[in-house]
Image (cartoon, rainbow, N blue to C red; front, side, top):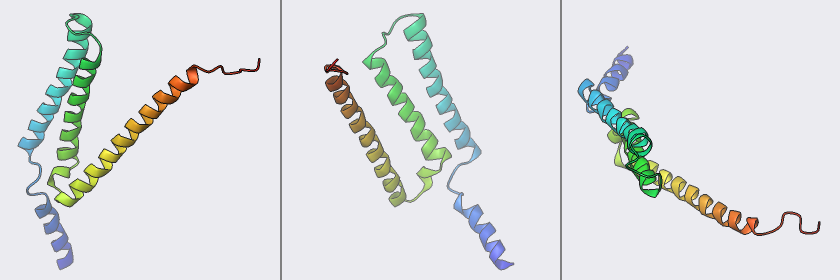
Length: 125
């Protein structure tokens, strides 16, 4: 029975420095504000009022806001902020390699698209 009590106490102590109700609600309202800002830019500034044009600037703003939301979700709701630094570095390195691989695939695909569109599909007909 003492092993069961040890496991129960360990579960209570493990998340003591983690999330409480106040932090959950503050992260929720930060995520809500970021989402509202994205909708305001997309529906208000770009489409309704026409203050911004679709293009690179708007895309960069969307990417930055999405990365900020991803950080809050991963750090607080997936509890990565409360892990040991070695695990955080390991996960970050994997994420960086995945992003690098996606960028390489996009560059290679753009090159192949440009190289293949200038050649005839059926040259002997």
